[in-house]
Image 1 (cartoon, rainbow, N blue to C red):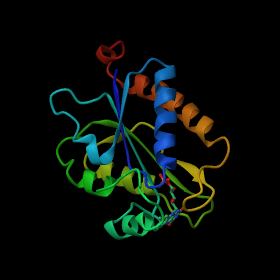
Image 2: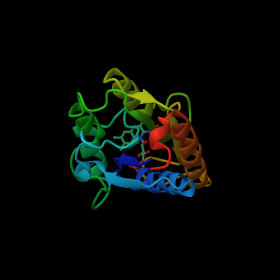
Image 3: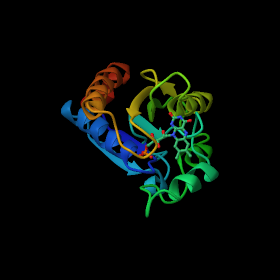
Image 4: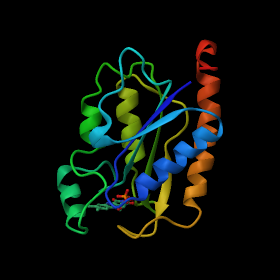
Length: 178
Ligand SMILES: Cc1cc2nc3c(=O)[nH]c(=O)nc-3n(C[C@H](O)[C@H](O)[C@H](O)COP(=O)(O)O)c2cc1C
């Protein structure tokens, strides 16, 4: 069983969550490749990952846009994701994710009005034929560029471990020991 984790991040919080989720998958011996979205390329058609995990920061209650990324870039010298985001990456996926086991996460501010990039990613992936092995998950930041709430890295690692268990249960038996 293998996993590919693709993330977008402006200020680094989603990148840190991505690494913690990967550590949780690795805790249960799942080899995982972590890629920033701009350099990820598309999943291989010949040997797709058994589990595809996609994460992004919540902007304007959903996925970032060129304009919201431009706004984020004005805050800092350099953002983690320098070019396109998950929105553009998903647009290229058509035909590649039919039946693909996936999981999605975001970072967002606390509160009901925050919105969720993960829900948008989940909807787009399922519309393209992918299957979500767990509900979308959100990890909370303390402000636009001020980092994660305490304990969110442990929350992410623990979610990664749960993901490993759900994905293994959903995988065909021939892939479980790979
Ligand atoms: C332009 C912009 C719009 C944002 N809109 C929202 C929003 O609607 N809801 C929310 O919870 N957080 C919003 N945020 C805060 C982001 O969620 C936060 O910057 C992100 O989680 C940090 O992750 P990163 O460090 O990986 O970029 C916004 C941030 C920016 C820059």
